[in-house]
Length: 182
Image (cartoon, rainbow, N blue to C red; front, side):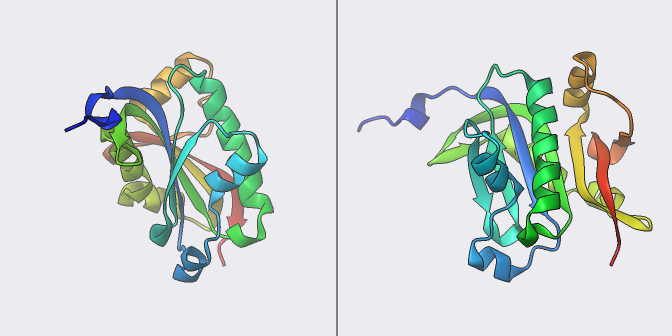
């Protein structure tokens, strides 16, 4: 029996990004409406991200190649997501993004592993969802970063202004571009 690449491919730590379009209607999933990572991958030159989707949940998951400048990449991805969420008529819903660096491995025709699992947990976490959608305004984009990655990014120059700790999720959250709750 021949071995596949997945049988011998070592697990690697890589930047994982997940986005969840909140209140994603099934009709959007069925129509193949792209989420924010798909939009920025097509329009902003993030073609080196490997993208996977969970269409029924409005979730996209992307993996970066190891060795990239994570501070610049995270900052650039946040900027590009803000532009995509504000400009795309089909994405008129709040988006929650999660960032984590963790172990990933080849699984089937995509990636998986604890890094992907932790990143997905960020955008599904009830405490994060609650903090991202509370008050008189709702952000068009909420960004959450796992605590260890946040501290690494801060040490490399990421501004800490406006971030709030979500202790139960082991993460930091920042809300961008508030819009009135309708």
